[in-house]
Image (cartoon, rainbow, N blue to C red; front, side, top):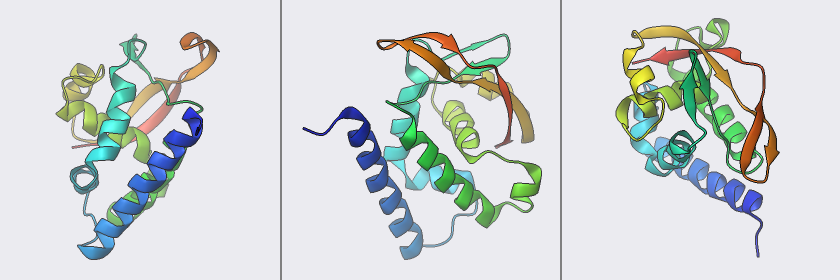
Length: 156
């Protein structure tokens, strides 16, 4: 039996390979919207984090959950940053975070996301958001969050 962590990672690898095959067969993505449209399984995977009970916006901070140990989300973030560099001028110099850009885009398009109302109010363009991740768990419940940090995102 594959552990939950390995299942999450395996799922992501399949999604990532599917994304790469899509873009090789069709065309280079021109925006995160293109990546969103081409990867419904990745969108569902990330939306699951944004629908959980402890995913909230409180005091202007977006509290975000990960699947298992978060390795799948880290890999998704790296892949999204690779795509972002393809279509966004000065992507790295602006400090854009592909993972959070995608979460904001998902939240804008999905009212099931706990970040939906927050994301809908963000002005278009490069914006800075404040986020936090789980630090300590008690079983499946988060008992402590990391200090919030700032992330730059592209808002469409």
